Image 1 (spheres, helix red, strand yellow):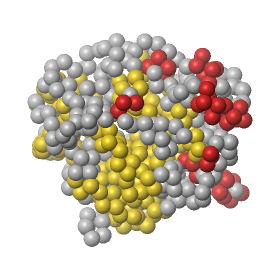
Image 2 (tube, helix red, strand yellow; image 1 turned 180 degrees about the vertical axis):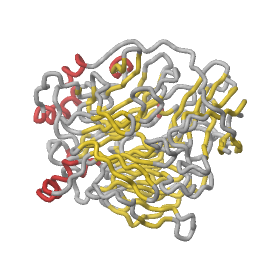
Image 3 (cartoon, rainbow, N blue to C red; image 1 turned 60 degrees about the vertical axis):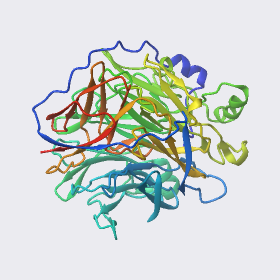
Length: 553
C-alpha cells in the first residue's frame, strides 16, 4: 500500500525523461547451435460471430474481499492471479489468490466455462504456476502475507490433483517472487522479496528481533533450495527477471514501495552484483512488465506507480488531500519520480520515455502488462488500477479512489493511445492481472483479480488480424516449460519477439504459452526458438491460426 511519495506531480513531469522512439532496425534472427525438435499443431477455434469490436466482461466465481466493511492498512493491496494449463488438456486454467480468504482454481472446461475449486490455502498474495520438481506438470506456488511461500504439488491424479508440500529450505517471509533458471543448470530457481512494512505492523518486535526477511535468491540444488541473501530489507511489491546488461542472462529487479529505492542485481561469475542502470525510476513501484513494443528485438521495461490519468477538477480534488498529507521534499539526487516509467534501451543505456510514449499516467496503477490485444503485430498496454484504504482516503465514500482500468493501443509509431472504446474500463479496483487466450480462438483475454468485487474475465471480441500460439516442452530438463527461452516469429515484412516467462504485472503469473498477433496480410516464414541453454530450433512456415507444441528432442 502506498503511504509515502516524494514529489508533487508537476515536479515529476519536469523530471521525467523524454525523447523520440528508436528507429526501426532490421532484427537479426536468433542464432546458436542447432537443436532438433518435434512439432505438433492444433487448429485454433474460429473467433466469435458476430465480432463486436469490444471486450465482453464476465464475472468469475472468486472475490478477494477485505475482512471488514472497509479496507484497513495493507488490506487494500489485494492479491494476484496466474494462468496455466494445470491438467494438460490444452485449456488454460486460472488460479486466483486471496489476501484473507481461500484461493480459487478455475478449471477451464472450454468455451469460457469454468469449474471453481477452493484450495484450503488462505492469506495469499502472489501466485506462480511453475514445474517446481521437473516432473512435467505445473505446480502452484503462493506467497503469503506473513509467512514463507506455500507449495502445492501437482500429483497428476485427477481425484487428488494438488497436495501441500514444503519448498525445502525455504523459510523466510516473501511477498513477491519470480521463477527462472538463474545459474544455467536447467533447474528452476526463484527470487523472493519481503514486504517489511506489513511484517513489522503485524509482528512488531518479533519481526525486528527475528531473522528478518529481505531479498533472497533460492538456487535449486538436488532436492532442496539453497538460499542466498541479497538484501536484509525490502518493501517489495514487484519482482522481475530481466536482462539488464544484454548478456542473454536473467538479472534481478525488485520494485519497492514507499521511498525505498528499487534494487537491481546482475549475474557476475558465480554471484550477484548490485547496480543502478536507470537515471529515473518509479517512486512506489507496484509492478514490472517487459516487451518488444517497437518490434526491434529489444524489450523495454515498464513499471507502474501513481499519477492520475484525468487532470479534470473532480479527479484532482479526489487526489489532492491524499497528496497534500503525504508530500515530502525530493532528496537531492533521488532518481525516483511519482509516475510510471518506461525504460527504453539505447546506445548509451536505458532512458525513461514514459511521458513521450503516453504511458506515464494511468491512475493508482497496480498491474500493467503488455499484450497484442488486437492482433495487429504491436504490443498494447493494459493497466488495472484504483485504491481502497479507509485511512488514506477517509474523505471519500468507503475509503475508495474509484478509477477505471486503462487500455492503451500501440499505434506502431512509438506511442500509446487510450482506447476506451474497447470496453476495458472497469472500475472495480483491480489488483493482480493475467492475459492469455482462454477460449482458444486466437486472441488474448484478460483476467483481473479485483478487490471487494468479483474477479472479471474480459473476453476479446475484437477479432482482428491473425495469430500463432506456441508451447515449449523440454523433456530431460528440469526446466520443462523452457522458462527464459526467446521465441521469434519472422514474416516477410517483420520480426516479432517474445520471452517465455512465469510472472508479469502485480503479483501475477503468465502462462508459459506465448502468443503472436500479426496482420492477416503477413505470411509467417520462420519460427525460431532460442532455448535457455542457447541452442536454437527453427520451424519453417508455421500455419497461422494454430497452436504449436514444440518438443525438444
